[in-house]
Length: 371
Ligand SMILES: *Cc1c(COP(=O)(O)O)cnc(C)c1O
Image 1 (tube, rainbow, N blue to C red):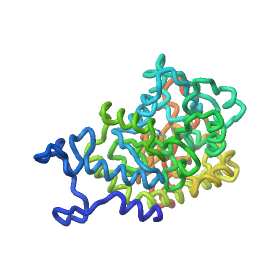
Image 2: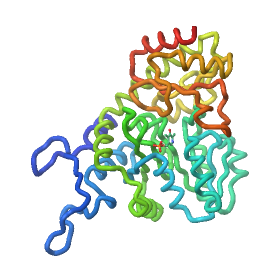
Image 3: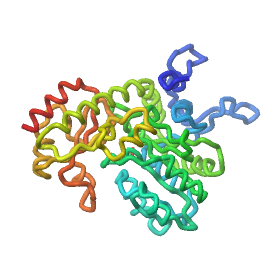
Image 4: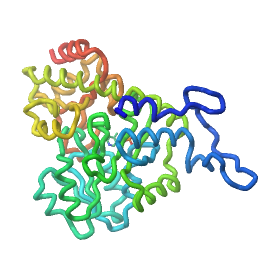
Protein backbone atom coordinates (compact mmCIF):
# COMPACT_ATOMS: atom_id res chain seq x y z
CA UNK A 1 0.00 0.00 0.00
CA UNK A 2 1.04 3.58 -0.66
CA UNK A 3 1.61 5.96 2.22
CA UNK A 4 -1.64 7.93 1.65
CA UNK A 5 -3.64 4.72 2.10
CA UNK A 6 -1.62 3.54 5.11
CA UNK A 7 -2.08 6.92 6.82
CA UNK A 8 -5.87 6.66 6.55
CA UNK A 9 -6.49 2.99 7.21
CA UNK A 10 -3.73 1.76 9.53
CA UNK A 11 -4.69 4.37 12.12
CA UNK A 12 -8.29 3.30 12.46
CA UNK A 13 -10.28 0.23 13.43
CA UNK A 14 -14.05 0.06 12.96
CA UNK A 15 -15.64 -0.76 16.32
CA UNK A 16 -17.08 -4.27 16.27
CA UNK A 17 -19.41 -3.71 19.23
CA UNK A 18 -21.21 -0.66 17.80
CA UNK A 19 -20.24 -0.48 14.13
CA UNK A 20 -18.76 2.97 14.72
CA UNK A 21 -16.62 3.67 11.65
CA UNK A 22 -14.13 5.68 13.69
CA UNK A 23 -12.50 3.83 16.54
CA UNK A 24 -13.83 5.20 19.86
CA UNK A 25 -11.59 6.72 22.51
CA UNK A 26 -10.98 4.23 25.32
CA UNK A 27 -10.41 6.23 28.48
CA UNK A 28 -10.55 3.30 30.89
CA UNK A 29 -7.27 2.82 32.73
CA UNK A 30 -8.04 -0.80 33.56
CA UNK A 31 -9.46 -3.83 31.75
CA UNK A 32 -11.66 -6.62 33.10
CA UNK A 33 -10.31 -10.13 33.50
CA UNK A 34 -12.20 -13.26 32.50
CA UNK A 35 -13.14 -15.89 35.11
CA UNK A 36 -10.01 -17.85 34.26
CA UNK A 37 -7.92 -14.76 35.05
CA UNK A 38 -6.99 -14.02 31.43
CA UNK A 39 -7.40 -10.71 29.60
CA UNK A 40 -9.62 -11.52 26.58
CA UNK A 41 -8.72 -8.40 24.54
CA UNK A 42 -5.07 -8.39 25.58
CA UNK A 43 -5.30 -5.15 27.58
CA UNK A 44 -4.47 -5.07 31.29
CA UNK A 45 -3.65 -1.56 32.46
CA UNK A 46 -3.47 1.83 30.75
CA UNK A 47 0.23 2.45 31.30
CA UNK A 48 1.11 -0.86 29.67
CA UNK A 49 -1.17 -0.52 26.63
CA UNK A 50 -4.36 1.14 25.45
CA UNK A 51 -6.39 0.47 22.28
CA UNK A 52 -5.90 4.02 20.95
CA UNK A 53 -2.18 3.80 21.60
CA UNK A 54 -1.99 0.41 19.87
CA UNK A 55 -3.74 1.88 16.85
CA UNK A 56 -1.40 4.86 16.79
CA UNK A 57 1.66 2.61 17.15
CA UNK A 58 0.35 0.46 14.32
CA UNK A 59 0.10 3.36 11.89
CA UNK A 60 3.46 4.80 12.99
CA UNK A 61 5.21 1.47 12.38
CA UNK A 62 3.65 1.07 8.95
CA UNK A 63 4.38 4.67 7.87
CA UNK A 64 8.09 4.17 8.56
CA UNK A 65 8.17 0.69 7.09
CA UNK A 66 8.98 -0.77 10.53
CA UNK A 67 7.49 -3.69 12.39
CA UNK A 68 6.70 -2.03 15.70
CA UNK A 69 6.46 1.44 17.20
CA UNK A 70 6.32 2.84 20.72
CA UNK A 71 4.45 6.09 21.40
CA UNK A 72 5.63 8.49 24.09
CA UNK A 73 4.34 11.63 25.79
CA UNK A 74 6.88 13.82 23.96
CA UNK A 75 9.71 13.66 21.46
CA UNK A 76 12.19 14.16 24.27
CA UNK A 77 10.68 11.20 26.16
CA UNK A 78 11.16 9.08 23.03
CA UNK A 79 14.79 10.20 22.76
CA UNK A 80 15.31 9.59 26.46
CA UNK A 81 13.97 6.05 26.10
CA UNK A 82 16.72 5.36 23.56
CA UNK A 83 19.41 6.75 25.86
CA UNK A 84 18.01 4.93 28.91
CA UNK A 85 17.98 1.64 27.00
CA UNK A 86 21.78 1.78 26.58
CA UNK A 87 24.18 0.17 28.98
CA UNK A 88 25.76 2.75 31.35
CA UNK A 89 29.15 3.75 29.97
CA UNK A 90 28.05 3.48 26.34
CA UNK A 91 29.55 6.11 24.06
CA UNK A 92 27.25 7.96 21.63
CA UNK A 93 28.27 10.08 18.66
CA UNK A 94 25.83 12.85 17.76
CA UNK A 95 25.75 15.71 15.24
CA UNK A 96 26.98 19.17 16.25
CA UNK A 97 23.78 20.61 14.77
CA UNK A 98 20.81 18.86 16.32
CA UNK A 99 17.65 19.54 18.31
CA UNK A 100 18.97 21.54 21.29
CA UNK A 101 16.45 19.99 23.72
CA UNK A 102 17.93 16.53 23.26
CA UNK A 103 21.48 17.83 23.38
CA UNK A 104 20.65 19.51 26.70
CA UNK A 105 19.00 16.32 27.96
CA UNK A 106 22.20 14.37 27.38
CA UNK A 107 24.42 17.07 28.91
CA UNK A 108 22.21 17.66 31.96
CA UNK A 109 20.69 14.25 32.69
CA UNK A 110 23.15 11.70 31.30
CA UNK A 111 26.51 13.22 32.24
CA UNK A 112 28.39 10.52 34.15
CA UNK A 113 26.04 7.80 32.88
CA UNK A 114 26.72 7.85 29.15
CA UNK A 115 29.64 9.27 27.16
CA UNK A 116 28.91 11.48 24.18
CA UNK A 117 30.59 13.56 21.48
CA UNK A 118 28.87 16.13 19.30
CA UNK A 119 30.75 16.30 16.00
CA UNK A 120 30.36 17.17 12.32
CA UNK A 121 29.00 13.73 11.52
CA UNK A 122 29.14 14.35 7.76
CA UNK A 123 32.90 14.47 7.93
CA UNK A 124 33.60 10.74 7.63
CA UNK A 125 37.24 10.97 8.74
CA UNK A 126 36.17 12.79 11.87
CA UNK A 127 33.42 10.23 12.47
CA UNK A 128 35.88 7.33 12.10
CA UNK A 129 38.28 9.10 14.47
CA UNK A 130 35.63 9.38 17.19
CA UNK A 131 34.65 5.72 17.18
CA UNK A 132 35.80 4.01 20.39
CA UNK A 133 35.50 0.41 21.65
CA UNK A 134 32.48 1.43 23.76
CA UNK A 135 30.70 3.37 20.99
CA UNK A 136 27.24 1.85 20.86
CA UNK A 137 25.17 4.40 19.00
CA UNK A 138 25.42 7.01 16.28
CA UNK A 139 22.59 9.54 16.37
CA UNK A 140 21.65 11.43 13.23
CA UNK A 141 19.13 14.13 12.46
CA UNK A 142 18.52 15.12 8.85
CA UNK A 143 17.65 17.71 7.72
CA UNK A 144 18.98 19.20 10.94
CA UNK A 145 17.61 21.81 13.27
CA UNK A 146 18.12 24.73 12.73
CA UNK A 147 20.85 24.78 10.06
CA UNK A 148 19.11 22.36 7.66
CA UNK A 149 22.29 20.35 7.23
CA UNK A 150 21.78 17.14 5.28
CA UNK A 151 23.44 13.95 6.48
CA UNK A 152 24.12 11.12 4.04
CA UNK A 153 22.22 8.43 5.93
CA UNK A 154 23.57 5.49 3.90
CA UNK A 155 27.17 6.64 4.32
CA UNK A 156 26.90 6.97 8.11
CA UNK A 157 25.22 3.57 8.33
CA UNK A 158 28.00 1.98 6.27
CA UNK A 159 30.58 3.28 8.73
CA UNK A 160 28.46 2.28 11.73
CA UNK A 161 27.79 -1.26 10.46
CA UNK A 162 31.51 -1.81 9.89
CA UNK A 163 32.01 -1.24 13.63
CA UNK A 164 28.82 -2.98 14.82
CA UNK A 165 27.34 0.31 16.01
CA UNK A 166 23.59 1.05 16.00
CA UNK A 167 22.20 4.07 14.18
CA UNK A 168 19.20 6.09 15.37
CA UNK A 169 17.66 8.75 13.17
CA UNK A 170 15.55 11.70 14.31
CA UNK A 171 13.18 11.89 11.33
CA UNK A 172 11.02 14.73 12.67
CA UNK A 173 11.88 17.32 9.98
CA UNK A 174 11.50 14.94 7.04
CA UNK A 175 8.58 12.74 8.16
CA UNK A 176 8.19 9.25 6.64
CA UNK A 177 6.39 10.86 3.72
CA UNK A 178 9.72 12.27 2.51
CA UNK A 179 12.35 9.98 4.05
CA UNK A 180 12.37 6.45 5.44
CA UNK A 181 15.63 5.82 7.31
CA UNK A 182 14.77 2.19 8.17
CA UNK A 183 14.76 1.34 4.46
CA UNK A 184 18.31 2.76 4.30
CA UNK A 185 19.44 0.53 7.19
CA UNK A 186 18.81 2.61 10.31
CA UNK A 187 18.17 0.62 13.51
CA UNK A 188 15.64 2.97 15.01
CA UNK A 189 13.67 6.04 13.96
CA UNK A 190 12.69 8.76 16.41
CA UNK A 191 9.98 11.40 16.05
CA UNK A 192 8.60 14.38 17.84
CA UNK A 193 4.93 13.77 17.05
CA UNK A 194 4.32 17.30 18.33
CA UNK A 195 5.41 18.50 14.91
CA UNK A 196 4.15 17.23 11.52
CA UNK A 197 2.34 14.15 12.87
CA UNK A 198 0.19 16.30 15.16
CA UNK A 199 0.22 19.00 12.51
CA UNK A 200 -1.99 21.49 14.34
CA UNK A 201 0.26 22.71 17.20
CA UNK A 202 -2.15 21.32 19.80
CA UNK A 203 -0.56 18.20 21.24
CA UNK A 204 2.78 16.91 22.50
CA UNK A 205 4.01 13.44 21.61
CA UNK A 206 6.91 11.31 20.51
CA UNK A 207 7.59 7.99 18.89
CA UNK A 208 10.19 5.33 18.18
CA UNK A 209 9.95 2.85 15.31
CA UNK A 210 11.93 -0.37 14.93
CA UNK A 211 12.58 -2.74 12.03
CA UNK A 212 13.05 -5.74 14.39
CA UNK A 213 11.73 -6.91 17.73
CA UNK A 214 15.10 -7.66 19.25
CA UNK A 215 16.55 -7.41 22.74
CA UNK A 216 17.16 -3.68 22.36
CA UNK A 217 13.50 -3.13 21.44
CA UNK A 218 12.36 -5.16 24.46
CA UNK A 219 14.44 -2.85 26.64
CA UNK A 220 12.90 0.23 24.98
CA UNK A 221 9.41 -1.19 25.58
CA UNK A 222 10.39 -1.62 29.24
CA UNK A 223 11.43 2.02 29.45
CA UNK A 224 8.08 2.99 27.90
CA UNK A 225 5.97 0.85 30.21
CA UNK A 226 7.97 1.03 33.42
CA UNK A 227 9.23 4.58 32.94
CA UNK A 228 5.67 5.53 32.13
CA UNK A 229 6.16 8.51 29.75
CA UNK A 230 3.12 7.45 27.74
CA UNK A 231 0.66 9.58 25.75
CA UNK A 232 -2.98 9.80 26.89
CA UNK A 233 -5.74 7.98 24.95
CA UNK A 234 -7.03 11.41 23.84
CA UNK A 235 -3.64 12.43 22.46
CA UNK A 236 -3.31 9.07 20.70
CA UNK A 237 -6.73 9.56 19.16
CA UNK A 238 -5.94 13.09 17.96
CA UNK A 239 -2.59 11.96 16.58
CA UNK A 240 -4.08 9.06 14.64
CA UNK A 241 -6.71 11.52 13.34
CA UNK A 242 -4.08 14.05 12.20
CA UNK A 243 -1.90 11.42 10.59
CA UNK A 244 -4.67 10.61 8.10
CA UNK A 245 -3.90 13.87 6.29
CA UNK A 246 -0.11 13.80 6.86
CA UNK A 247 0.92 13.00 3.26
CA UNK A 248 -1.24 15.83 1.85
CA UNK A 249 -0.16 18.32 4.49
CA UNK A 250 3.51 17.49 3.93
CA UNK A 251 3.12 17.93 0.18
CA UNK A 252 1.65 21.39 0.82
CA UNK A 253 4.43 22.34 3.25
CA UNK A 254 7.08 21.26 0.72
CA UNK A 255 5.52 23.24 -2.12
CA UNK A 256 5.20 26.43 -0.06
CA UNK A 257 8.70 26.10 1.45
CA UNK A 258 10.32 25.76 -1.98
CA UNK A 259 8.53 28.84 -3.33
CA UNK A 260 9.28 30.90 -0.21
CA UNK A 261 12.95 29.83 -0.24
CA UNK A 262 13.32 30.82 -3.90
CA UNK A 263 11.67 34.18 -3.26
CA UNK A 264 13.73 34.93 -0.15
CA UNK A 265 16.96 34.10 -1.97
CA UNK A 266 16.28 36.92 -4.44
CA UNK A 267 15.84 39.61 -1.78
CA UNK A 268 18.73 42.10 -1.45
CA UNK A 269 18.61 42.13 2.39
CA UNK A 270 19.03 38.35 2.57
CA UNK A 271 22.55 36.99 3.14
CA UNK A 272 21.58 33.36 2.58
CA UNK A 273 18.70 30.93 2.65
CA UNK A 274 19.23 27.46 4.14
CA UNK A 275 16.85 25.08 2.38
CA UNK A 276 17.89 21.69 0.90
CA UNK A 277 15.58 22.31 -2.07
CA UNK A 278 17.81 25.10 -3.38
CA UNK A 279 20.36 23.79 -5.92
CA UNK A 280 23.21 25.69 -4.23
CA UNK A 281 22.52 24.12 -0.81
CA UNK A 282 25.52 21.91 0.10
CA UNK A 283 23.22 18.96 0.90
CA UNK A 284 20.98 19.33 -2.16
CA UNK A 285 22.31 16.32 -4.10
CA UNK A 286 22.17 13.96 -1.12
CA UNK A 287 18.74 15.22 -0.10
CA UNK A 288 17.57 14.55 -3.66
CA UNK A 289 18.82 10.97 -3.37
CA UNK A 290 17.41 10.08 0.03
CA UNK A 291 14.28 12.26 0.19
CA UNK A 292 11.09 12.47 -1.84
CA UNK A 293 10.86 16.22 -1.16
CA UNK A 294 12.90 18.82 0.68
CA UNK A 295 10.63 19.48 3.64
CA UNK A 296 8.74 22.42 5.05
CA UNK A 297 11.51 23.95 7.20
CA UNK A 298 13.95 26.65 6.18
CA UNK A 299 16.24 29.19 7.80
CA UNK A 300 17.13 32.62 6.50
CA UNK A 301 20.08 34.84 7.45
CA UNK A 302 19.99 38.62 7.04
CA UNK A 303 22.81 40.94 5.97
CA UNK A 304 21.67 43.45 8.60
CA UNK A 305 22.45 41.01 11.42
CA UNK A 306 20.41 40.38 14.53
CA UNK A 307 18.78 43.83 14.36
CA UNK A 308 17.44 43.22 10.86
CA UNK A 309 16.29 39.67 11.72
CA UNK A 310 14.40 40.89 14.78
CA UNK A 311 12.87 43.78 12.85
CA UNK A 312 11.50 41.34 10.27
CA UNK A 313 10.19 38.91 12.86
CA UNK A 314 8.37 41.70 14.69
CA UNK A 315 6.81 43.17 11.52
CA UNK A 316 5.16 40.00 10.23
CA UNK A 317 1.39 39.68 10.47
CA UNK A 318 0.57 36.19 9.15
CA UNK A 319 3.68 34.38 10.40
CA UNK A 320 3.43 33.92 14.15
CA UNK A 321 6.56 34.49 16.20
CA UNK A 322 6.77 31.24 18.13
CA UNK A 323 8.94 28.19 18.47
CA UNK A 324 8.00 24.69 17.23
CA UNK A 325 7.10 23.55 13.74
CA UNK A 326 5.02 21.30 11.57
CA UNK A 327 1.64 22.94 12.17
CA UNK A 328 -0.72 24.22 9.47
CA UNK A 329 0.13 27.82 10.47
CA UNK A 330 3.45 29.40 9.57
CA UNK A 331 5.76 30.00 12.52
CA UNK A 332 8.96 32.02 12.64
CA UNK A 333 11.52 32.46 15.36
CA UNK A 334 14.82 34.05 16.22
CA UNK A 335 16.40 30.68 16.94
CA UNK A 336 19.55 31.77 18.81
CA UNK A 337 17.54 33.49 21.56
CA UNK A 338 15.38 30.37 21.99
CA UNK A 339 18.43 28.12 22.33
CA UNK A 340 20.07 30.34 24.94
CA UNK A 341 23.55 31.76 25.59
CA UNK A 342 25.58 28.64 24.57
CA UNK A 343 23.98 28.49 21.10
CA UNK A 344 26.07 28.17 17.94
CA UNK A 345 23.15 29.34 15.79
CA UNK A 346 23.98 32.57 13.91
CA UNK A 347 22.39 35.66 15.48
CA UNK A 348 21.09 36.88 12.11
CA UNK A 349 19.13 33.64 11.52
CA UNK A 350 15.37 33.21 11.52
CA UNK A 351 13.95 29.71 11.38
CA UNK A 352 10.69 29.30 9.52
CA UNK A 353 8.14 26.50 9.67
CA UNK A 354 6.32 27.15 6.41
CA UNK A 355 2.61 26.53 6.87
CA UNK A 356 -0.27 25.77 4.58
CA UNK A 357 -1.55 29.33 4.02
CA UNK A 358 -1.60 30.48 0.38
CA UNK A 359 1.96 31.19 -0.74
CA UNK A 360 0.96 34.59 -2.20
CA UNK A 361 -0.18 35.74 1.26
CA UNK A 362 3.01 34.45 2.89
CA UNK A 363 5.23 36.21 0.36
CA UNK A 364 3.20 39.44 0.61
CA UNK A 365 3.60 39.34 4.41
CA UNK A 366 7.36 38.81 4.12
CA UNK A 367 7.61 41.60 1.57
CA UNK A 368 5.93 44.16 3.83
CA UNK A 369 8.00 43.02 6.84
CA UNK A 370 11.29 43.33 4.95
CA UNK A 371 10.52 46.80 3.56
C1 LIG B 1 10.69 19.17 18.72
C2 LIG B 1 11.77 18.27 18.39
C3 LIG B 1 12.20 17.28 19.29
C4 LIG B 1 11.64 17.15 20.69
O1 LIG B 1 10.28 16.84 20.69
P1 LIG B 1 9.24 17.32 21.83
O2 LIG B 1 7.94 16.76 21.35
O3 LIG B 1 9.30 18.81 21.89
O4 LIG B 1 9.69 16.72 23.12
C5 LIG B 1 13.21 16.43 18.87
N1 LIG B 1 13.76 16.52 17.65
C6 LIG B 1 13.38 17.46 16.76
C7 LIG B 1 14.04 17.51 15.43
C8 LIG B 1 12.38 18.37 17.10
O5 LIG B 1 12.02 19.30 16.22
